[in-house]
Length: 358
Image (cartoon, rainbow, N blue to C red; front, side, top):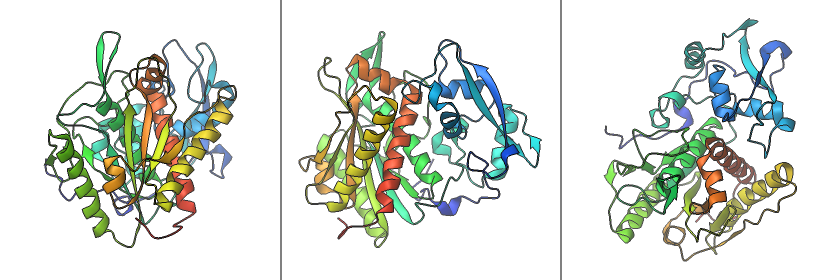
């Protein structure tokens, strides 16, 4: 499937309807149901079992049940949770997956196949990032799976988890009106809600380019793609976000780290904005745990050194550490990570440029 000219942007989203969320003025626009969490339930699976679109109702669910969640994203078995159901023109939408998908399709003018069949629809939340361009690069891919680890007798590959988080981040940015280029792409994976993500090697680079086996050639390919697109979008607000999963010793449990170019004020501001968001989230949701993640310059990294847009390079946990694996394997955690990164991106964009773009 050719997608050389395929990109995502707000021009593809025709909004026919104002999505009803917590901010809606009419109090009867949401019908609240309750459900008891069973063993093994996560937010996404709980919403899906109730017939709600898990990604469109995710934020509402968090807001409604915040005091009843562990670390802002985990359910307690046996506790009762509120489930928001959409109500349009005083008629409740029957909470079935089939009908919910039909209603969403009427509201949203465009779906994005790269997110997978179940997650293709993007509902606009705001226009805060309208005109802004984001390049998203997930680590490794193609012939290189990145760091490997064992989990319950199954192999885990870094590139699959970095890609899943990147897709979730792309969807969040699109929902706020951004133009998004996904540089490393897998046409048949999409956003996945599994804990163990199946390993494959069919990822390609933007423009259907085969990813080279040689590491230097692979990194140079990504740099060239990003820099060419950066030149094409000259004059626009542009940012690059690179996502990796770290691979330190098994005993080392780490928080999320952010790197930037030492001479890039805008790159530093982007990294700092996301870092501040994570600090705020940890303080709110895990007050008894100190957040040790940092943001710092790391110009020695090839993509940090060679790419032109202001950028941040993100390391998300240690795939070989058992505690970090909990963060990485849980789809609710991956969704929360993407959401927190997107909130940091919004914070960065609100401040605009602070000097010459690099």
